[in-house]
Length: 129
Image 1 (cartoon, rainbow, N blue to C red):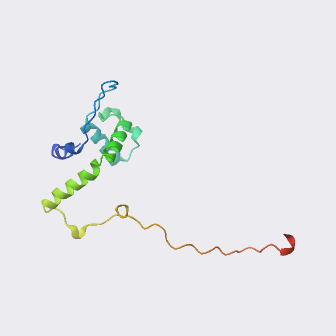
Image 2 (cartoon, rainbow, N blue to C red):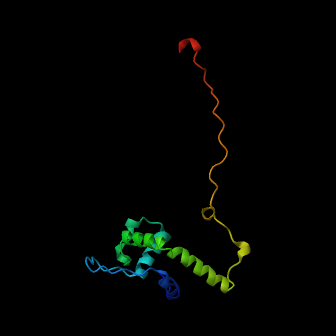
Image 3 (cartoon, rainbow, N blue to C red):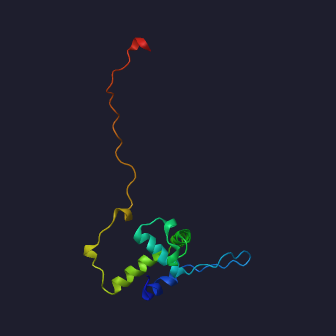
């Protein structure tokens, strides 16, 4: 699912796995298989817990945790910058056709204050208070 050429670019960006000697637990699943599982879930849109074990990508929770860990380590941002730099160096980017998604632009907080709501019902008579 992940071509060798792409994997050679991604692998150096991944943080080194720390081996626990006191309580080793299960052996860590191969990063490439987990990446395939992450891509499968993101591409198909299935919930993490429904990732089929038969595919060999590990559990959905394993893939989700690795996605979270790699995000916190800045892997996705570094990969994005690396691929953009390589595409730019190969003159494969046409910036005149670039589109910025609103998710990438910080929105200003606040805005105009709403006007005070106008009362539409009758007010209580002063003699009933």
